[in-house]
Image 1: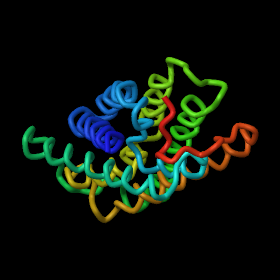
Image 2 (image 1 turned 180 degrees about the vertical axis):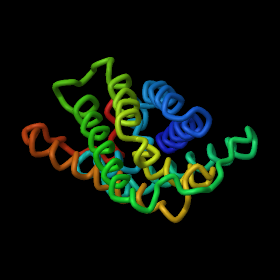
Image 3 (image 1 turned 135 degrees about the vertical axis):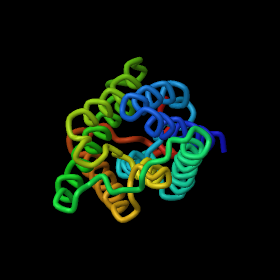
Length: 214
C-alpha cells in the first residue's frame, strides 16, 4: 500500500506542476518527487515506465495494475485541484492540428523512448547502482524533450499526464489516444533496446513489486 500512495503522490505533484507552470513546473516537481519516493516505489509516476519495468523483468502484471491505478488517480486529482481550486482550466481545444497528428505521435514516442531509456540506465543497472544523479538525469530528460519536440504534441510523454490534462482541458479528449499509444510504444521500445544492450544485466530474481530499486 505504501508504494501505491507514493505513486499517487508523485504523479499528483507532477501533474500539478504541469497544469500550473508547464514544462518547468513539471520537471522540478518530478525531480523532487523522484528523490522523495524512489526508495519506496521506484518513482515511476508514469504508466509507460511501469510497462517498461515489466519488460525489463522488474515488475509483473499483478504489481503493475495497482501502480497504473495510483498514477491515473493521482494525476486526475491534481487536475481537478488545478482546475477548480486554482482556476487553471484550459479551453478544451485540441492542441494538435489535424495535419500534425503523425508528428505529435512521433514526438510522444521519441520523447518517451528517451525518458524510459535514461530511467532504465540510471536507476536499474548494476553499473549505476547507488548513484546520486538519477533524479536530475530523469527530470532533465523530460525538460530536454519538452523543449526539443514537446511543442508538436503538448509534451505529455505519460498516459496519466495526458488523461489529467484532458480533465483539466489543456488537451482535448478526441486526441487522448495519442497520449496512450505514443508513450506506451516509446517506453516498450526503450525497454526492448535496453534488454538487448544489457543482456547480461538481468534482474535475479525478478522482484515482485513494480520496480523498486532505490
